[in-house]
Amino acid sequence: MLGERRGERSLARARAEVVREAAEEATVTRPRSLELIRPGVRRFVAQRVLAPGGREVRGDRDAVRLAVNDLAARQLPIREAHLRVAESEPRREAVVQELKMSSLVLRLNREERAHAIRLTRRRNEAMAKRAILVLACLAIAAVCPAAAPTGKMITFPSGAETPSAYLALPEGEGRKPAIIVIQEWWGLNDFVKSKADEFANKGYVAFAPDLYRGKVTADPDVAHQLMRGMPEDRAIRDLKAAFDYLRSRDDVDATRIASVGWCMGGGYSLALALEQPKLAGAVIYYGRLVTDAAKIKSVAVPLLGNFGGRDEGIPADTVREFERKAKAAGRTVDFKIYPDAGHGFASSKDPAVFRAADSKDADARTDAFFERVLRKK
Image 1: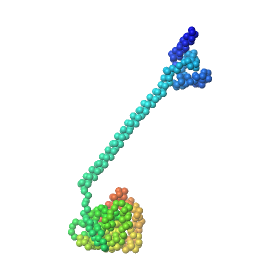
Image 2: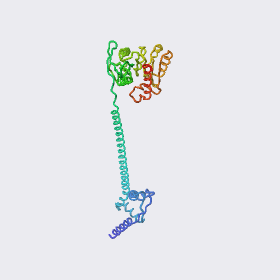
Image 3: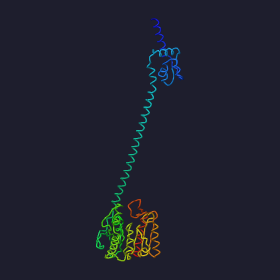
Image 4: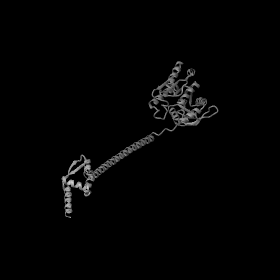
């Protein structure tokens, strides 16, 4: 009995000395050697000594030996203090990681809010610019309203038919020179009517026959069908009938009638010049040309042509060849090729096609030509 009490007191002193002993840390180099000497020690080293970072606790050698012996005999209970030491590092790391993640989330939120503010500001600026542009257009429209058509639709005889036409008259009394204004493949649209009004404002009787019989389109596919579906002989007949109609009017000088056309109308302006030698002159805006030398030689009417150097439908070489043959035959031909212009450069609504400077120059050439052939200036 007395021996058991002494053993308990010795065990208690050993445990107290292990707890009180100041810990000295050192790296465990060979934990496997402990396993060979005393089974179960490696588990103890891994859980108790190595958990704080691969280090062992050194104190009084004898006290440690007693503690290890008791642990091998499963007499030393696992101390909770050691568990808390082992678990403290991972917990601190988790807290630090959580703080870092919180900081990152806050920064991302700030950046997202700033980006949203920038987008809103840009959107508001774009809307403001758009509103200013609309107001400017409205102001211009209010100050300079679109000119109403000065002409009117009438009918005229063409064989057994009575097609319609747009007639624009100049101011003043007496007989005036006249111009037959020939449509593009779109039909008798607002562009053709506006050109007729412009010629009327310059002192000419302008007459634009409706070759499509009332059909107008802005669709290229439909325009192509309308052009292909129109009989060419009927179109020539309508144009010759338009010339005869103008000659019959009391306000027209029968000896001063010319023609002008764009695209399809340009080709028909040349066709009318070939069919009606009494025509005073013909203007061709990028219209189809004939290639037959005999037909070119037969043209008795002065011609003016405005063509695009990049027009794939009417190559510049074709334009030059026609002019060369006509001048060789003694005909009056003045063709100009605008190098950077394509087909429709003077009449297209497409900003990528329309060329303001080239169009202005071509129109100025047309005005000068009509002054020369119709007013003899």
